[in-house]
Image (cartoon, rainbow, N blue to C red; front, side, top):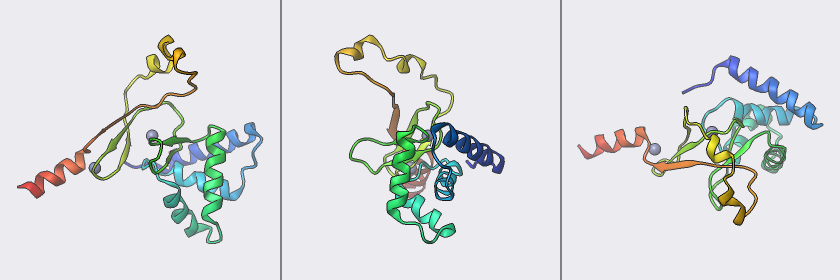
Length: 155
Ligand SMILES: [Zn+2]
Ligand SMILES: [Zn+2]
């Protein structure tokens, strides 16, 4: 699964437009940090993004990457993936979509073709617990690749 150059450019220009709307400067560092997210379906964590951005901006600090990711998340320009207390991973796809997390290799994959409308409407049953502003759905299990690998190993 790869993202075409065209898709990356499309994501980058919509990011730049979003920055303008949010009153955020589309600085070189912000653009490059977002580019790493826009260019992958991997849902990388902050350290991975840092290592990749550093190849192009050697002077960037891990702290800057953390702060930028937090800011973009606050502005809802990226989303956070993973449970509380787990390594935080990020997603530049802000369309509501569910994930599949592999409990063997940790890969986080987007699951296509699932309509989350009913969940996102925040049913009345929620109101006794709290007021929700987002919904997050993920399945956990062993991914196709790990299944194949363990099949080979077990033979
Ligand atoms: Zn796996
Ligand atoms: Zn995703």
